[in-house]
Length: 639
Image (tube, rainbow, N blue to C red; front, top):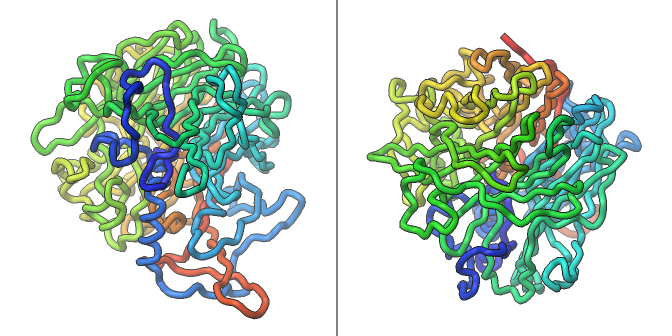
């Protein structure tokens, strides 16, 4: 789930951001992608690295070209406006949230005018039927933060162009000029007890030579929608933390992977407080988790606070300084709240010591009982095993993990395992955390899947990755019944933890990019990409599935997608977002995913004659396809 931003100019990261009080900024050297340590490069989100690697990706695309585009057949499913709602359409129960019509691009700009990925969805706990979605949306020619709202429980949606063109300057922002932004992404949404919708976005500038503007700054921002359920938002956005780099020096740290939540509990002492957490990649090689909050409906924000402090669980600090604690290499944080006002933050940590060929890492959790002012020491949610090194098993995309298929080598999009935490509203001391693990009860040494250490780039390797019946990624569940003091996974090996999908047919197929939510009556819903249907594990095609449980141990599963989706081809096939979403409070599940079942349409190259539309096949023989923000309204299966 990694969806962040970075410039490509000379591999200089766009969006380096200064954080007040961070050591080492006075005489820091310019920080480029090459200045990141090996572990920082490993932790950098998929969105960030996809933007960094844009130039290389275009070269890869050209090298993989399958020949000239083909004119579209008359019956090709290219969607045109059918009503005032735009290009709204569905596949059975599956409906697209982004009702804009697909832009038609030049062949060499694949994805840059069409894709939607990193889908997120929220629902109003007190006003049933109000659903708000969001995604990284590329319709404007670069990454953008767009929203989708529904007042009929997800049966239909309208688009919202979120106003992120500029943020204010002036004394409140260090005397900086007003900032205009070139791109954005990493969206999330939340709805408070009074019906206000909050929307987070990371904005950034790319610097030179991508543009003539040397500004490499970025900002984490939050917007509010009041009175219309996400149909429109305040302008300009309120900045959580930002520092312009107008001179283009690139000396500031890089902020990555932000998510927000709101305390939407009427009995909480921090009712309607908004929280944002993120990772800061600093020039000293560290990657700490920070939190900021707003107690005035996202108008103003607190000074950032370190979440990932010191713990005896963090025994390997990579020889780096520990200015904010021993847990100094982290990523993929997610904040969530309990009815008593407790704020929990869960994230992936990489400071554990491993021996031999073992390559596990750990999910950690800290909590705040004073509204985000201070945090407890981290506790272990569980160990987990990350996805395998992509280059080792597919020959594609060095430096990233992916979900390889076992035969056709069409699947090489960037992926990682991350945690999602939720609190049972009926039993507030019961906390569930879901996460992916490549070693689990279905894929372990007994069937030929064995950890084998790390590739040269520091990403996990395994024996049995391409062997049918051996390795697979599972969505696991670790549960606390004492308000996060300990979890079932604290002392239980991931090989023995419960899986969210217990269907026999999925035993050795992959599931990834999950999200979770509790219903108000205490059922846990979990949704995720899935390769248990047909021959998807061989071909690299995918579906989306939904699982449900009453006791957090036994799960039932249903298929969400009405047909399988081909491997993504947008962005040369290496980027399909970093996460998906789910909302299920009122008892109907609303999973959100990026769908690839519609063809990608290009302007046919050449001159002379009237313009025509073309499609084409990728270098691995897959019909070029779009990425669309989809959802469905479904009953939650339970055993």
